[in-house]
Amino acid sequence: MASVTSLSDSVHQRLAAALSAALPQAGSADPLLRRSDRADFQANGILALAKKEKANPRELATQVVSRVESGELIKDVEVSGPGFLNITVTDRAITENLAVRHADGERLGVPLKENAGITVVDYAQPNVAKEMHVGHLRSAVIGDALRGMLDFTGEQTIGRHHIGDWGTQFGMLIQYLFEHPGELAPAADVDGQQAMSNLNRVYKASRALFDADEEFKERARKRVVALQSGDKETLELWQQFVDESKVYFYSVFEKLDMEIRDEEIVGESAYNEGMPETARLLEETGVAVRSEGALVVFFDEIRGKDDQPVPLIVQKADGGFGYAASDLTAIRNRVFDLRATTLLYVVDVRQSLHFKMVFETARRAGWLSEHVTAHNMGYGTVLGADGKPFKTREGETVRLEDLLDEAVQRAAEVVREKAQDLTEDEIQERAAQVGIGAVKYADLSTSPNRDYKFDLDQMVSLNGDTSVYLQYAYARIQSILRKAGETKPVAHPELELAPAERALGLHLDAFGDTVFEAAAEYAPHKLAAYLYQLASLFTTFYDKCPVLKAETQEQIENRLFLCDVTARTLHRGMALLGIRTPERL
Image 1 (cartoon, helix red, strand yellow):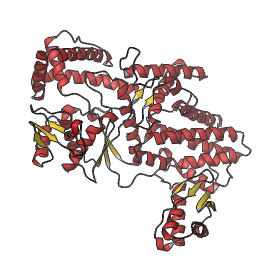
Image 2 (cartoon, helix red, strand yellow; image 1 turned 60 degrees about the vertical axis):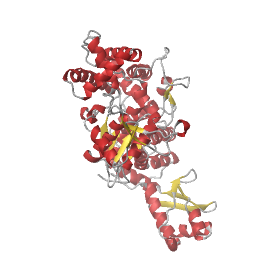
Image 3 (cartoon, one colour; image 1 turned 120 degrees about the horizontal axis):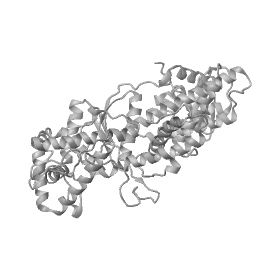
Image 4 (cartoon, one colour; image 1 turned 135 degrees about the horizontal axis):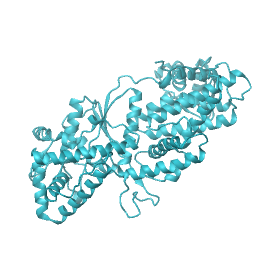
């Protein structure tokens, strides 16, 4: 692998050296480089340093300019304003850097992170015996994208799908079926959807009975004890629910074009045996205390009504365990067995308080530390056109597979309208890639902690910040490369670049920096924004710089080279987000 130092990093190194030479008493200095509209980059850290050293900022900036090594990297440096430096790099530097990236294949010269760790990503957490709905979309899509970005930077990721497969609801469901054995007719379907619909129907019926009948509620609670104690008959029926649900989960995730590995599905039940040990450790160390018969953890800063402390309940007074015990046992497993250095939870923002208490409890117990950290990637809500949580017209929660099917159907209309030489089978294949990509991109291009409106018309639009716009940019480049025939992309560093070529080249060079920043901040929307700007810059380049009709053969080859690097970057960036880039559209 040929890793490449980005132009911004190279310029930063030159300026830092010149700044240290101009003001040696300040030691190493950071020029705080950023992109600029007036030049390729702008250094704006000189003002703060000059103030600290009681120096004149413009004089200091002028001294730095006199010490900057120009040559093949830096074309020009000028002082502007009260002491800013505007830096322009050479055309040769842009083309040569891109040439090394182009030669590196799929990694595009992006280096791997030094001292990479192990991150466990907890995402895509559906519930056994329940149909997946629109509320499950964000956790799955965001988590999958985060894994893609982290893996690309060199981090080792381990997925965990903490499915809801334990607790009171299963005692309720199993007891209902023991008392109504004919309710769950066998369903012979390959994708598990009919079986899941039956389970979902029975679950609703058992919930209604549980809420209305105190005697049934008591029998259901005893069934929970039987389940947790390993009663054979109870476990067999529970396992049937789990197996049927997994078949269904896989079918939905396949529609989402996501790989879910069976060994990474580790539900609440997997931690059942470890929960008593978790409770014992917390009580023995004094992290948790007994209060009214329950084992709880108190937090001075977390208070409820009447300014009373809100406890985290590890073990109930009747000896049962809840979500806190399961989550804390999962932390022990991930830290001590999986050797994770980072725990990343992609969970609804409404559970932020719960995880705040869980993480603090784990820190007090010594399971989390400065070397092993946990983060909750709380995400916002998917809204309908009315700005309220997305529902059907009847007020029901939207089934996820129905939403995905509609997205593919809408995309098929768009692809069919534009298709020139595609068969109907190819149109349907592209429609799945475009429709699912549109749903994912709309989610990922929004900051995770924000709500967003689900608008399929906008999502599959060819105009604006959509995945379809990016996919068509990629397909257009592939068309150009095919039309070029025997003429291949070749970098010509000696050529002068037009403004649109320079803008495109500089942005391409920033791909690695953007991926590392987005991965470090758990911010897939930053990568999405980069890719949209890349497609926009390519459109400007294509409009202003003829490719196959350029003036010279060298210019044709160099512009084909820029097209090819753009296509590879779009393809790689979209793949990190879990989105396909069809060769033809």
